[in-house]
Image (cartoon, rainbow, N blue to C red):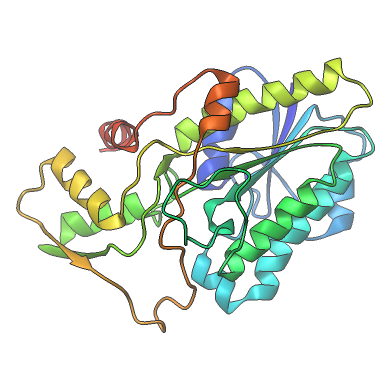
Length: 298
């Protein structure tokens, strides 16, 4: 397949591009042009049109996003442009040639008031700008005649020193004690596991397009590692895996609003039953994925 991946230099994008390159022709897109990608400002509709001009893609995967939750709260205009409008322009570009379009979304489209795992059919009600703009992106994604929304959560993996796992690793190695928040329950997701799921879904969407000319296709999947935890408990698990007995991990209930202006859902873990049933697979426990990541990168 000829596949376009946006956010090719991001934490998920660069893992996904590397995985896809083993058997597909991949074009990566990044505003900064890192990691063998094409330069394109996705917030500019004319540049998006040029990206598709003279090229025939079999699949488009939109991983690029402004995912700084507090940054989105401080700059809603940038969040809207980066998360919603880019999706609008890409979905529109996919329509003429009926290119299957995959949009990576978030568990933050939910408000966190449930105590049971969220399903794809549960009511969306974001409580921060990030979630609102990603939900708006979901609505735009559906404008493509063949669209798939993939909601995921709390990514960790190589390529971003600021993701939670990498940031807490640096603290555990440099400090005698670390205070960690325990105010959110969620499901960590290893980017390698998510990339594998995206490939399966992409092949499914491309196959539908090929064998059902003229028909539309819209679906939503939720993909995250199995299990629910807090950042505090995950830090303790990292400490246990690496044998960092001398470091003390303390629970922090909340941060002052000036340090964290965006509200977070208290519970945002999602059911992956739809994905697991359709593809006859089980997603790994977050503890197993975390152990693999730490063994590969430490």
